[in-house]
Length: 177
Image (cartoon, rainbow, N blue to C red):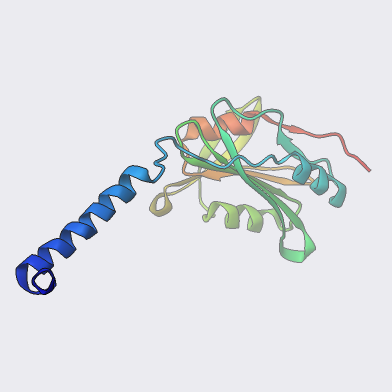
């Protein structure tokens, strides 16, 4: 019995037992081959946000085809303003986020969401003009639309057409009391 615990043979047996255990674990353990992005319904968050703010809230009338809504929250912005965030994994599996707030000054909110204060042009989406911003070091593209009562921001690593698709689906929800 002692010869299996000493020297090269003992080492070889221990190594074989460890490798056999590792192989058994790999063969038995479930292996997911499919992508899993958690889906988070944002309808209740949008409804709650609508109750808390004095203006008509914007939200997508539907999710863009192939997109997965994967985060949503309401946060406290500056000067007591509420901010609604809706996050998505796009069809190309990039990130896109829609944010809105009545935070003033509106430019500060837009700058913070875009991580930039520099416009790189404009884009017409659904007959409305959106300001484009781009921050190269973060690969972040942003569309900004400042309205009298709210600022809308669509931002992320998604390309311009995907961001425009989300912006084009935004519509005002009826105000609820």
